[in-house]
Each structure stands twice: as C-alpha cells, then as structure tokens.
Image 1 (tube, rainbow, N blue to C red):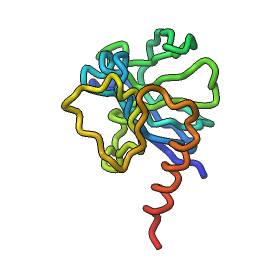
Image 2: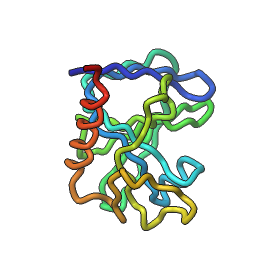
Image 3: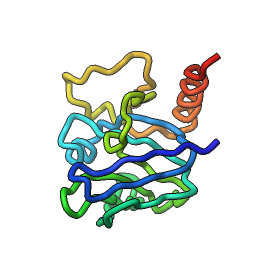
Length: 156
C-alpha cells in the first residue's frame, strides 16, 4: 500500500512529495540528533520509497559518518537550512523524512524512543512507546508496532 507524503522547508524554497510505504516513526535522543534538531531529540519517519518528487527548489546535501561507521546523506534546503531527509548508504531503498517538515503533522506520534542514554533528564517519554538505551539491534519491532498502530486507526 503506497502512501503520499508532502511537505517542505521553513522558507518554502523546497517542496517535496514522496510516495511509498511508511515503516515507522521514532524519536532519537542521540547527541547528533539533538544538535541537528536544536532540541532534545530528532524524529524520523522511515519510508520504503519508490518515488521522490522535488516539487520546487533544489536540495543541498552533506554526508556524515554514523556511530556504526556507516555513512548517512543528509539533505536540506540551501536557503534556510531546514533538514528534510536522511538516507543511509546501506539502505538505498529507504528514506527518512524529518516529519516536522510534513504539511500534516497531526498524527505524528512516535512508536519508539532510541538512544535514551543520551536523553535530556527532563524529557518525558510515553511509557507505551518502545524504549532503547542506544540503537535497537533490529528495527523489526518498531516496524511491527507502527503497523499495529496504523491498523488500529483504520475505520471499522
């Protein structure tokens, strides 16, 4: 089942549309996500993508090394600097949308919090969410929890 996600940067220069299946939404409390978001955590909406359309603007990018030694390409608006996407070199079939850039953020609720060893002590974590001190060894449980939540939200 393909879903369509639309969003854009803060200044409006970059607009995008992505069609694909959402796999999970989680909050990451690692120091890199704290720096990137300028907040206590970053969020990631993982999409198994088949089509990315840049509706306007051009993206800039830079690549950083992750703690596991892999490389992540970070794409952002060159005008205002808003981070839009992340892509891991070892997962070319997936893209991570920075979900705050979506036009509709009303249903954004993470199913998990990762890297809690780096979390700010005042961060309130919903006890119903999956919780990990670092990176989960496997993301399958996060995918399953996301599917369960989407299934429960479907009209009867």
